[in-house]
Image (cartoon, rainbow, N blue to C red; front, top):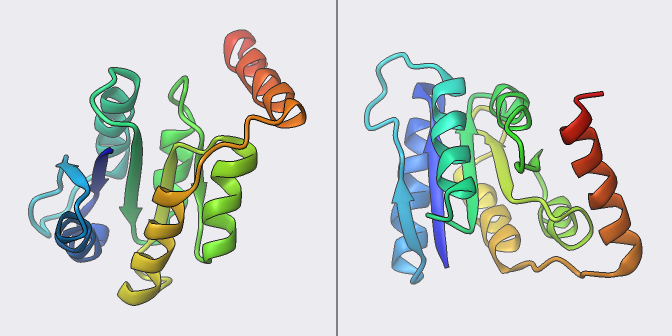
Length: 149
């Protein structure tokens, strides 16, 4: 499974750790930056990650910023992206299983690296259930995207 990972300057150190550890665990990682801790803007990285997912270059994505909020707001503006801020493992797997979440957003100033890695693993291992009720709800989300209302 190819995973796109990106983050701004505030998420740089946590992103770097996730890239390294997840590669060691056998994941094919597409590192979209930031590649240093110089000030940068999370919407730029959300756009890169969204493009990678929508273009089929990666199956899932992880975005890291200081709180996870800005990354989530920006990512959710991109058609086809269902991003969620998760700072616990339950939300990370449940968001995929029920909501077909395809982008995990993490706040590097909110959680530590060990928990972030556990959350990323829960997100990456989870699969959408495909149950009718969940498919119906995802369809309604797509309708909102298509009508912009």
